[in-house]
Image (cartoon, rainbow, N blue to C red; front, side, top):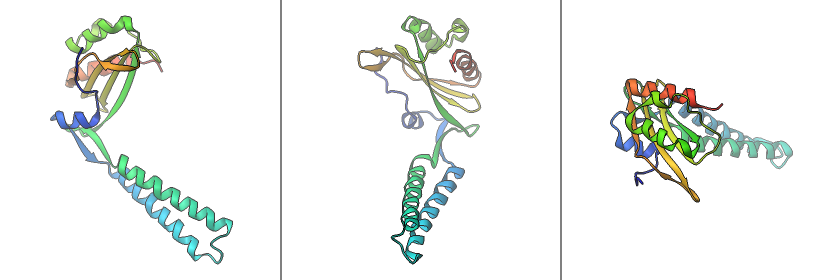
Length: 180
């Protein structure tokens, strides 16, 4: 049983040279706009003749809500993890498989034998979990397998990185095995 860390974007960023964090300008601008609108709505309540009226209270609640939501977006979504050569964002995917497929999945991950498991289909839940970080351009993938041992998933493989052709073949495997 492997004791490697569970696949995580913060671990991945610090340990792979082709992965980094970049500021997402669109999310940053939207978050700042929401914060400014929230402050404006909140301050508008003090300009009303009766700030304790229903309109004043509604503006106050909306203003606080917009401010909090904008601040949360600013903290969580202003930076994204990207594949540096193409600047494409990474997205996390989780697939579940039946326990009888564990050997085939280990073969796929460790030996890059994607053609051996071409007919493998994921399920909505299962004893084997595959965590994947995949770039939008399909030029990079990070994969780790887990097995459910009572009460939690434990790592079965180390984090495996695929780039270029291997990553594209793995992305094809993901599309073919997904149950959506």
